[in-house]
Image 1 (cartoon, one colour):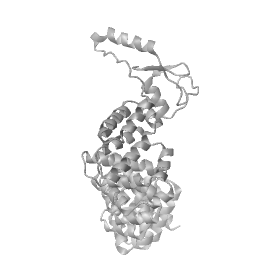
Image 2 (cartoon, one colour; image 1 turned 135 degrees about the horizontal axis):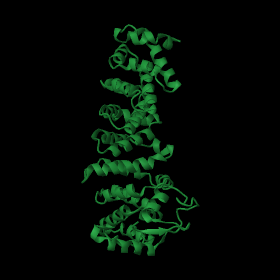
Image 3 (cartoon, helix red, strand yellow; image 1 turned 90 degrees about the vertical axis):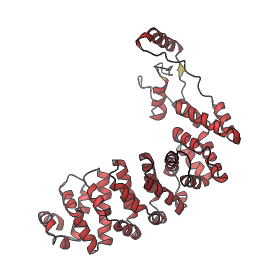
Image 4 (cartoon, one colour; image 1 turned 45 degrees about the vertical axis):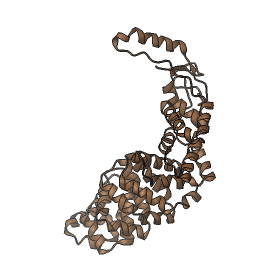
Length: 390
């Protein structure tokens, strides 16, 4: 322990550990006694135990043990409010933001205090102010602070209703050239994801073409792994609306999603990627862009039975849409060349959800007469002909 504190249940823990238990993991009970332990309950410093630990460290200094420092006083809400007030003075902004970032990075206790003082809203308002004034200084620090303290869902919903310019402001940041370009973009997309997770349908319907163009650039530039995942989640949140899907397709999203998948990304990235691709293939323009990429069918077929049940679901649905609405002779040939048909046959024999097998059977049945004429897959289809046709 470095900073022992005693809870209202009488058990002593290291402050960082119990705060992580309460605030980050969102538990509400004492780990030892299992009694109720509210988040706002007092954590009393155990000075006696701390002094004993420090004395032991001093006695064992010859063995390479460093003496733990005396913990700093808890961050005061009034001090956070003072820092927020300093944001209104241009000369004090950077110093105030730097101090906030340092404090937010220190521990969970500080981050909770900052949220209670209204810092998330203050940071969002600062970003909107930077956008309105064309100011880039301080943006990186503000985004980093928001990433550290996290915006409470209730606050994000309220702020989106009160200040619609935040989406436009973050879109502007994604197009700005500034120091630590990749980090700033990654943090901006992360904030967008948090804001849009609980956004109302009216907010999601008002998204503009420039917004999707900037998100697609994030995918193209592959700024960071986390940035890519956040960008995909943003697109997924906006996909249910036809107007958004059209703007995504027009911004070249389908091509970039396929290019991203060809790079063999992480499992979660593939799940998100194919989720977005499925939505975009629901419209004719999306399917046309999908088929215009030479590796589209191959990369989707390759993911079947190799990643996760969620990927199996999306991959089969994508191929189903392609075969049903865009099943030209060239597509039928491509399904053979990309080994998508044998993969569908394999899925019929695999241990997977019955509805997926039914969907695969439906795809095979739809073009069975054409595919059985290809010698390379005749044996696969022959042994499954009864299963496919029944």
